[in-house]
Figure (cartoon, rainbow, N blue to C red):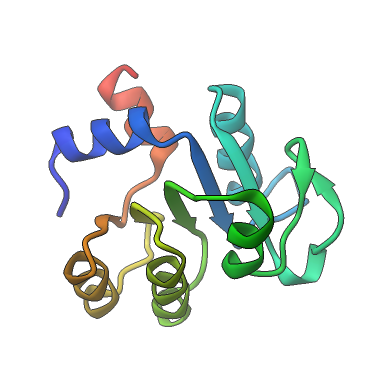
Length: 139
């Protein structure tokens, strides 16, 4: 579990955030969270292979984190909107591209993936939502 100082640091220092599992549908949580993060001044990169090449959040939707890193530069935080059993692959991709932090959304729990990320030097937040944390911490 991440403490408030870690959460605060990630949310205030992350400039570029990739949202894995972003949806173009406004009613989906991934859409709303990405939009809020972008409205707060973060550069948000949507990652969804089914939507790759389309435009969203002021940029191009990427098929993968590797593609996002290759075309959009360094990524500070990877926000993962995937089922728990699929989250580990996204965490491994975040490690591979040199992200500084991974954030697993509410209900997304993979302790093994979190341990791999920490061992690789990434900060980890799991089973939390950045929108809720921003409000809770008054950021």
